[in-house]
Every structure is written in structure tokens, then in C-alpha cells.
Length: 113
Length: 112
Image (cartoon, rainbow over all chains, first blue to last red; front, side, top):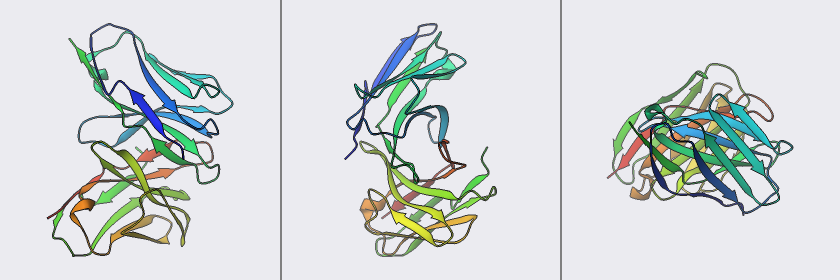
């Protein structure tokens, strides 16, 4: 059974700092790895999707990497801003076809002005 | 915005009553998913659908049933609500193979 872990559960940083969020998964047979953002009381917003054949994806100040052999993904946020404060969730895509997602519990990020 | 709406957005009900949550999409995508989100557990898949009348179970399907009689609507039913089903329920759609899932705004359900 696939399990996804995110450490730390919470992170507080000053504005402008570069930071890394970590995600690990137990079964390397994933279809893809996705990162989402969730603001309080809201739904999830997709940030980046890395296919199993890819090593990384970039969008603006965000860069996500994937190392299937070690069961790890990282989300790098450059020059953090208070507006980046949210909970970040990673999810492993399993079972090609249905492409079900197994989620980690998230890292709550606070960027202080 | 992927054109996903959920109704109701908030509901309070009593133990033992039936409850139906609705997910509606405007883009005619094949795959739809129901998740629940709870503190300490994260998001967990309840059921999903891969077409009209085609559904399958997820990780936490006990106590829930689903129906999809039209492409645009995916219904989640709690036949007899229990307090353990108090949660936030999210619907999601997937536009195509290898694409991400787009989530609705969620329904907060409180079972007293």
C-alpha cells in the first residue's frame, strides 16, 4: 500500500527566504507526483505535476523534483512571500488509467513579513 | 476554474439520516473523484467514476455509495450518517490521461 509522508508538518520562515518542502513515498511504482496548495477553508489548487519519466518541473518561483529510486520529491520555493502562506500537499499518482492519488498530510507554511 | 460546483456547501444533520452530496461539472470530463479531508489523515479517496454508471471504490468507501447517471453529475450518498463521517468532502475531476485533478470548493458536513 502506497504511503506518502511530508516533513515537516509546519514551517515558518521570514519573507525572502528560499525553502524546500519534502515528500517521500513508499512505493516507487508511481504514475506521477503532484504538488497542490490549499488555502484555509478552500479547495486544492494544482501547482506542479511531474510524470514518472521526468525529473523536475518548474513554474515561476516553484521547482519540483522527483527521484523515484529513493522515493522522494521536493518542492523548492524561491524568494518566499507572505502570499505563499498555505498548506502544501503532495500526492502520488497510482494505478494508470484511474490515476488515483494518495496524499500526504501536508506541510503548513507561514511566511512572515 | 475547472467549472466544478459542490452542493450543499455546508450541512448539519443528525446521526442515522441519509445525506446526498452533489458534484457538478460543466466540461464533460470522464473521471470524477470524491475525497474526504480530516485532521491527522489528510485527503483520502472515497469513490471515483470513470464514466456514466461506471464507479469504483477508493480507500475509505465503507458507509458511502455513489451514482453517476449523467456525465456532469457525481453524487455521494451517506445512507445512514454517523458522527465519524463528519468531515470536509471534496470532489475532483481529471481532464485527461496524465493530467492533474481539479478540485471543487468542498462541502463541510457535520453529523450530530
